[in-house]
Image 1 (tube, helix red, strand yellow):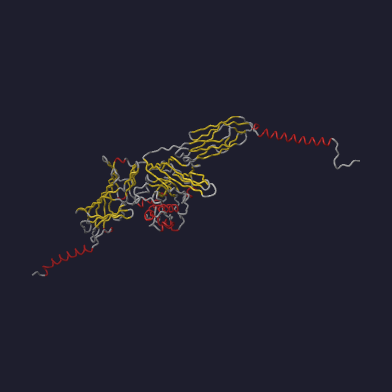
Image 2 (spheres, rainbow, N blue to C red):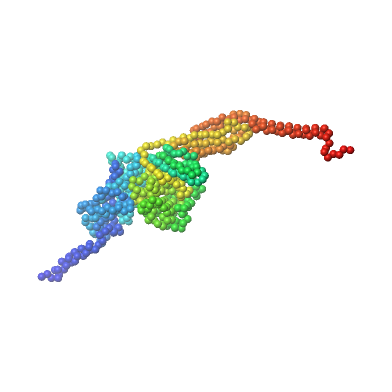
Length: 631
């Protein structure tokens, strides 16, 4: 029989086994972020077909002896995932895929649990998706979401691999840690610090061409004729517009304060008119020119004021700005805008359920701020513009078409015809800069602040007003494989008399029309003469003239002496074009009204003389006055 002393080691061993079993029976079996650290080695291999193969080697390190992980959950900014697989040292792992809003949630169950302080377990996760790469016409675009939000990511290395056939990248944001090339692949390496706050964007190609058709239905229900206008896509710093056809021809096409092209039509009373705009747009990844005009104080004041949906003086807006800049206010517009932009992206949540409503109601900035879970692109746009303007940063709204292969990640929500809204703010160093808070929010952190894309085609600019101009809701846009070169065609017409009367004023009317298919850039109009004087300025700096647009200018002319008789040439110079008009100057006394005046004066004098002479003879004949008395 064993003594108690002999049984003691057996008892201790038995109790240890029981405690060990009980510990793992009651210990949490899910990943608690604060109890684990993770490191990632991730590779995105983009195929020539645009499908991206993702491979992740994930190492999980236990920071406590109290927990172990039974599964791993990863949220990815992608909605279309195929060929999902996972494995650890024990073999294939059970994986589950769930879609929520615009993300995919992957749950991988470990085959074995590793417990103990500083113990690590490594597993591999792989899948494919076509959400990360887009082929648009002759360009390729790669957009990778930012790294998973976690305070315990100890390390994150990312390698992006693309085919050499894509060409050299024209823009990369952020700049890669390193670049290399093999025979048929390009490699870009990024570190954790580079992609913590935003994702990766790489563009291959410098320009993109779209063809568009817009239709407007105009109606005049009044009893009188009216003049009305429609907005057509304008040139901007990032796009060139070619107008192939505008049916019917407008009375004129003008440019408003925001830079919109307005086509004007005269509508008879109680009439309807359909207008069709057919054209092409070339979009650029970088501004067409590094030169830009600084805003005047008057222009700046108009672009920081509040409006119906931009409630800049609302206490909630001002309080939010105080919160955003609680750590201090940067000096430059770009850095102030960055903080405000990041707040809007993180505060609002895109509400896909509102897309089911055929008549989406615009909420405005304050309502969006107070209802952050019910936003579409208008709320992201209105809130960002309002916060920027309240901080005295000029900002405006851009409405138009945005190309998206996956509307769950990059939604288009203004109408059934894929219209979208985004923001443009003024940077003192770069001029107008486009940003899209909606797409950064909905795409899992793809960077739409530091770099833009070739997918946003502007139809209208709203700066002076939050409501005008209205954009057509009948839109068709297609990617074009054809390039184009716009060509303005300037026609000069002048209305000047063939002769001038010396010393008398005369008017010269000059009309410059653009009958080409693209805008005429600013140009100088000059009137040159020899004898004739131009009373007002003979040099006029003309603003841009859009296709089918025209402008008319009046010049006051006069000769210095009334007795001159000569000939002179009026030269009208516009850029490299010159037209000459011969003018005859006749002396004052040959002015047609002069003989008439002298004849009339002679007749008048002769008439007065005859009357006086008749009175004189009448008295000479001796007729006594009627009231005289004979003696």
